[in-house]
Image (tube, rainbow, N blue to C red; front, side, top):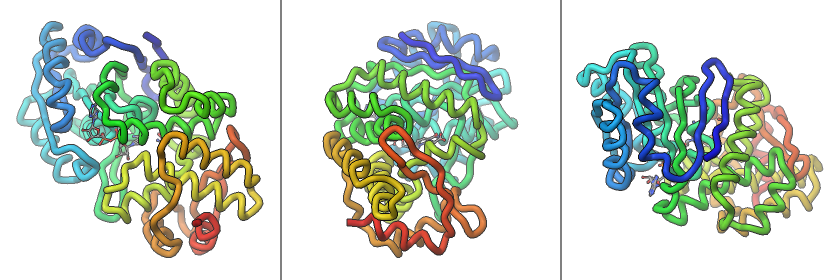
Length: 351
Ligand code: NAD
Ligand code: GLY
């Protein structure tokens, strides 16, 4: 097991390794002096892991109530958020108790936003069960729900008290979901680590999860420590996300978040190569690794549709939008563009 410490507005540990779920009760107990845990999960993860988690919590003398919603991005909505708040209130959860998110980024983001806002903040533990949640969404305190106008438009920065990443849970993850998580892994390599990028090109998806997850989490820890509230370098973590969120939205969320990020990274790198911001070799290397991982690189939407979908993006401020652009493999920078130039810029990146 590896333990990584985050020192942000709240300091907490992230444990990564096999066999952690049975130890969850003992590890969560110190963060739940009131003794009541509200487990929040989706219907698929519920059937796979909730019993094991509940047994572990019960063996640590923790009482459990459980909120289960239908899986998928559509679950991250205002209706579920309100139902969850009502559920916490009806269950009598207090500030001495905690919300435990069990699952991928969807339960994590929804549960986290409820934990941040119910009673103005209660205990919060993340138990990620997707690769994407392990390397990204369970760490760093971004919580959110989607609004009809766009993704993650209502949310809060709220750091967890603890993150338990049991790598055994990845065994049941469908291949398509695992690969979608790989897009976020490739994102970290593209942003910060050319050596990791080369290693991933060799291993493909058969990498050792514990060490790769730990490496990504270490990068994220550094960024979150430096810029918890996303005003500077944390925006680098949005590589591929501006176009990616637009692709997700235009597809009616049939394209998975990780797949959309892969498309977004590819489009931006190609646009950068066309605009002399990076070399064609850099863009090609990114496409090669995405294809090696079975991820999509071709964007099914045109520049006008993408630009329109991007106008509601959080990364827009006034008449400008901040993009993350690669300079080389392992090196990316923030790049400000006038919102009305976005369509033309993106067009250059569409095959
Ligand atoms: P998800 O939570 O919907 O999980 C994907 C699918 O995998 C679901 O159907 C789920 O039921 C299933 N699943 C989860 N764990 C499983 C397991 N171990 N075995 C079998 N099936 C399993 O989606 P995700 O890809 O984990 O996360 C995507 C979400 O995360 C998006 O909403 C995105 O916006 C958000 N996100 C948030 C942050 C952040 O910093 N808060 C960062 C990146 C992404
Ligand atoms: N996933 C982007 C961030 O946490 O900032």
